[in-house]
Amino acid sequence: MADINVTPLVDVMLVLLIIFIVTAPIMTYPIAVDLPQRVINPPPQLREPPPPIDLRVDASNQVYWNNSPVNVNDLQQKMEEEVQKDPTNQPELRIDANPDSEYEVMAKILAQAKNAQMKKIGFVQ
View 1 (tube, one colour):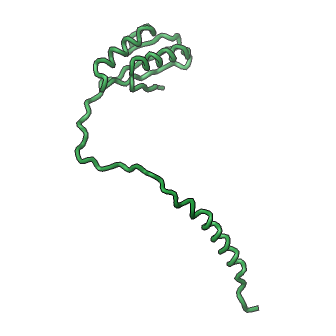
View 2 (cartoon, one colour):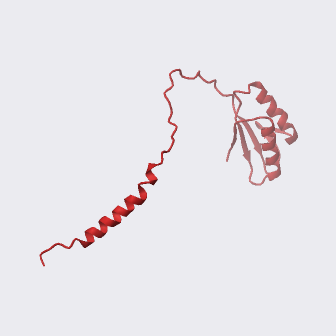
View 3 (cartoon, helix red, strand yellow):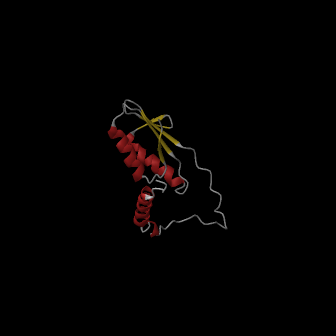
């Protein structure tokens, strides 16, 4: 037999045609993408942020504000004082909690930071 068997070729072409027919309508839906625009006037230079506040909770649930012990109930007042110095340029609150400290103390600290309108809160390991 000297003729070429084109049946497998036709089968593959039909499968590819079906795939293209099924996937073609999916690709016609536009997707809105907001691309960054070129800025003609650059924003003003930002001020250097104030030094961060190191808040540490040890295993006995004692809280330290920049290595000086402080009562948990007095934290919100201290945080509000820091925020009121410059609300647009707040210091970062870095919280370092011992794994053996109680969750209740951390919950109080985070609630007080939220109530004091602190925007920059980070956790240290």
